[in-house]
Image (cartoon, rainbow, N blue to C red; front, side):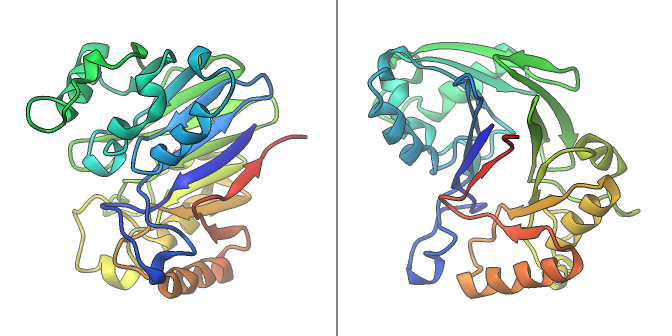
Length: 272
């Protein structure tokens, strides 16, 4: 599978010369199978640039896209109204841990009333809805499962796997007070890549317990417990400059050799 990050910043988009290296767009990543199945994780502002690339394809009007939504906080859906395939003939299936009816209701609310000039339901794409829980769901050559995360109003981690390997996206989660989340460690065990929440430094977290986010150290502990070779720090704090992200990435790498910070434009593969 081919993986590309389109946004790795959490909470809100940012811009400026101090955030150019890792980018200021909010969460979005694409995962493409060898057969061309396209899965998109989250619809933060990074999805706009992805949509522009998809719209430029000769088969843009015939695309079948699968969008996995971890939850409905604004930083994970605020790019969707500007996603070009939404206004074309693409077939888009939206998945979340909620019921199909509730997922549609949440997305319609984003573009309802005075919030946006076009109603979500009136956009030209064909839209369907699915639910992903702990039981695996097959999408093309992918097998996808979910894991509940510790976050205000709930969130869901996703594991996307095919015969070449797997990637787990599990941002927007906070470890239990008793230590690492053993359920999440079991979920990521054996994966090729683990994308973790690195919103806070351990020093910052001491004053932000209960906010629903973690640190690079929490990601390292989980990666060690689960035997994961590659750790990607994501959901980066909008108040952290590139230099600060460099520092936390260095600290993480000293503790876990396979750690690095995710950034816009980063491409990975599990091809064998």
